[in-house]
Amino acid sequence: MRKSWRAVARFFQKTIGWNRIGVLLSLAIIAVAANVLFHMLRDLDVNAVIAAIKATDYVDVAAAAVFVAGGYFTLTFYDLFALRTIGREEIPYRIAALSGFTSYAVGHNIGATVFTGGAVRYRIYSYYGLTAVEVAKICFVAGLTFWLGNATVLGLSVFFEPIAAMPIDQLPAWLNRVLAFVILLTLGSYIGWVWSAPREIGQRQWRVRLPSGPSTLMQIVIGLCDLGCCTLAMFMLLPHEPNIGFVTLMVVFVSATMLGFASHAPGGLGVFDAAMLVALWQFQKEDLVAGLLLFRVLYYLVPFGVALSILGVRELLFMRTTKAQLRAVRAAEPLRSEIEREKS
Image 1 (cartoon, rainbow, N blue to C red):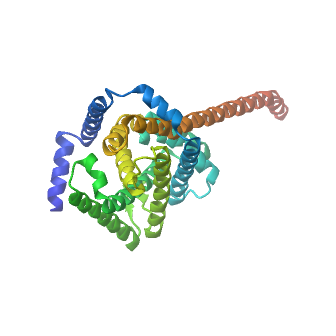
Image 2 (image 1 turned 90 degrees about the vertical axis):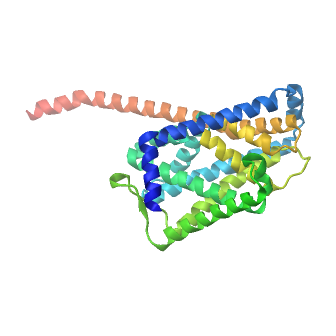
Image 3 (image 1 turned 45 degrees about the vertical axis):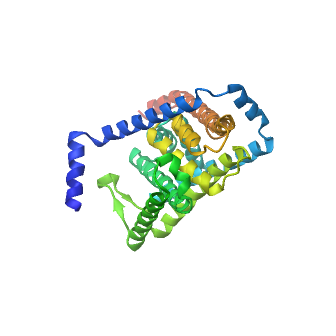
């Protein structure tokens, strides 16, 4: 059986290529989302959307902002955990927090988070002596934390609320529950696998030791906190009526987030929104669009602006420091030349 799967994998790699499959999948997701948005928003009342935004309670917006801040605070531990996993314990939390916040804030908005976030991480960590390979390992471990958290949340929430996923995947409730059970079973098998013995993947300098069983549980807790804060932020921005359960929203939110991530579109733009509009059919369309717009401002645009400001100030300080060092070197050159002449 294993040989058959390997033969299939080699066939796809040689004839099509996994990268092309990924690109085609992303384009397909974006195309479907664009078609859905076109049909759902073509008769949208813009004035009603603006009115819904103005009618949103400031307390709800403030609470959503607090939960967004909590989510980004949790993201800083993605990097801290990854640094400890690869053995770079000397890097302090403040640097991990800077890298975690700015890399995700930039990556979420530009898209292709693996590359854009990785570039930001390398710019920060290289100053402290980390190599490109070590930064790549940090990206891998942080990504693993993200997917473990998503798998846990999606598996548990869909298992208890399988109907909530039906508008998105168009599958019957019983099959959604079966798939959720498979996700949880796979997750449990992975935890048991890394718990039983030290595990490594990759080759040569790219070899990464996977977190142990207890550390994997810590990864899952970090992911749960991140997704929980994000879902709560979205929950605060939804209309109060009709009232849907938090677990139902979590199924929809995580599914939409994963589709947006798979599309590689900046901020999952269009894909995330289309999934939310389809799944949350109970709400008035204009009210839901207002909530989605507010969420985008709080979760994407504001952190993006803050991250760019931090990175910009940091680069200016580095430039000033570099210029000061160059001036000091040039000022010392005549004295150095005089000393060398005296020695000779």
